Structures are given as structure tokens and as C-alpha cells.
Amino acid sequence: MAKQEPKRPKDVPQNAIWNSQNGEWETGAKNSDGKMIGEWKWWLAPNGHLCCHSFFDDNGQMVSFKRFHPNGEVSQYGEVGDNGKFKERVYVRTEGETTEIFPVQSATVWTAKVRPGVPVSYDLFDKDGNQINGFELSDDVFKGYENQEPIEGFKRICNVIDDVLKNVSNEYSFLGPEYKPVFTQKIHKEDIEICEKRLGLKLPPSYVDFVLNHGLFKGGENKTDEFRMLHPVKFGRLSDALAKDWYVDWDNFTSQEQEIMDKIIYFSMGDDGLQITWFYCFDFNTLNPDTGEVELIEFNQDDWTWMCNSSDIKKYEGITMRAFIAKLAQRVLERVKDELE
Image (cartoon, rainbow, N blue to C red; front, side, top):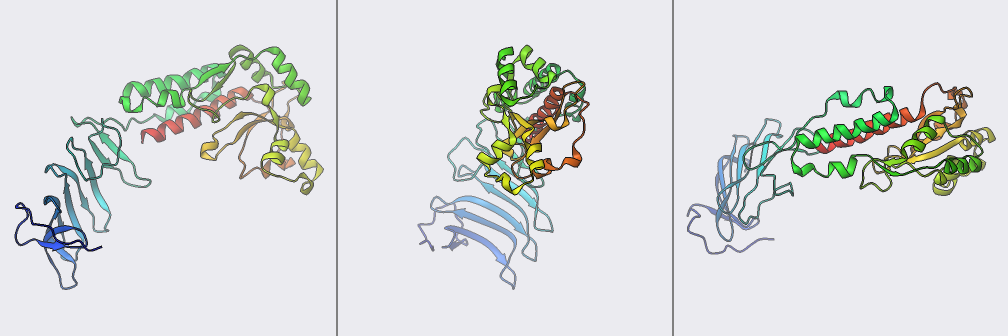
């Protein structure tokens, strides 16, 4: 909507032309195609503060720009490449009142520099110019969990997050309660026996040993469903969950396929928020009769029919809980890494 020109403030040059569409006064030249070239300035109504100062090449392509808060401080600046994409774009906060946009909510962040690529992310700096994000996790933190005892793997997750928190600002204090695993509940032998009787099977010894000695845990104090080990009373057959919650009609499958799915037991929530893993499951089709261990697999509601394929079933040789901790650690620390980028 066109805006009527208000009284021209004294700081706005007399040669500046009123732009009724944008509610600004502006100065600058245009080429024969009507594109802006050279130096341009804009003053925002009604107070008339200089809000933007830009330069364009002879073809009308922006080369660089600065925007300003009403108090005259720079609010944003950048350079543009020949391809029309930003080579640099930086936002700067002010303590004064402003109509300018600052993309980060935290008051401790004074400057936000846009990183290349998508989705949009920023390098963040405090008022003194100290970078307060950008801590990078070494690739080593994602390795070696499968070779550790489960409780050691659990401790290592916590130690990595503690190390991160020592090296980043308070802005990232949420990482502890959000991602640092905590034990939630003790499990007793009777809980195991009741579950085994109900399901008609023996739970993997590595799982039983772990929960009897350490209990259940979840991948962050604030977590409700994600990365949460279930109490044995809540274990269930994946075939039943598929029928109840995903409306799978087993009459459309062979009896062998249903029998295979009946032997897959979910025991932990996954990372359903990312839609990668809904459940972690014990696959009793892979039971090693000598060790009592079974393969640990992940269930995603969008991709599960491969589980029905009997040709992939093999006797399991590994240690279930070790695999579970390894999977959990990698997923949790990948989330932490994403938060830091």
C-alpha cells in the first residue's frame, strides 16, 4: 500500500526521493533498464534515520550493503558475489530500541555471522568479539563404543557432554539436561521373570545383567519418549504394535512373515522426534542358543517390511547391550553436534 510522505526530517537530504511503496526516502541512480546502479541510500520514515547504504554494479547486481539501527549503529552488513549469493552476511545487535531484525534470541549473542550452506546457521560472538559457539566434536567421540562394556559406554557419553559444556558458553547449558543420559529406575529379578513368562522367552543375558546392576536409563533428563529404555512390563511384540498403532492387517502377510515379526520384541524408545528410529528391538529370530544373545535392530514405522525377510536371519554372535549403548551414543552425540553447528 502506498504511504503518504510525512514531513521530511532534517537529516534526510533534499535530493532524496520519497518512495511511497516502501515508506522511505532514497537517493541513487538507475541504468537504462531501470535497475539500481552505483551508490544508494535509504532513510526510513517517519524519523528519517539512515537505514541502508548499498552499492550496485552497472548491471544492477548488489555488491555490498550496510543496514543501520535507529541510533546509527550498524545492524547488518554483507557482500554479494557475482552469482547473486551472499559472500558475507553479518547481523549485529544493539542495546537501543530498533526496528531491525536480529536472528538469535539470546541476549549474550552480539554478532551472528551467517555460515555458507543450508539450513541457515550462524557463527555467534559476544560483545567483545569472542566466539561462543562452533565447538567441534572430534570424530573420535563417535568411535569405540562397540568395544566397551555397556556401563563404560554410558559414562563416556556423559564425559563427552561434560567436556563440551566446559568449552562453550552458558547459552548451551541445556545440552546437559537435554542429552546427558541418566538412570531412572532399578529393575528387579522378579520384573524380568514376569516379562519372560508373559512373552514366553528368555531375555538376552547382557540386557538382564545390565539392568539388574544399573537399572533403566533415558538419553537426557528432559526426555519423555526419546532414547528411553522401557520397563519390562511394557515390552511388547512388534507385530502387536504394528497392528494396534500402525493398523497393519496381518491377514495380508504370510504366516511365516507374521511368525518372524512375533519374535521381534521392542524394549526401548528410539529417536522418534527425528523419525529415524521409533523402537529399539530384540530380534529373537537371531537367537544364539549357546549364548542366549540376539541381534538388536531398529524399527522405523516408514521402513520395516524388510524385517519379514527370512533370508537375512542369522545366528547372532555379538553382545546386545553393547550394541545398544553404541547406537544410543552415536545418535545422542550427533544431536549434540547439530546443536553446536
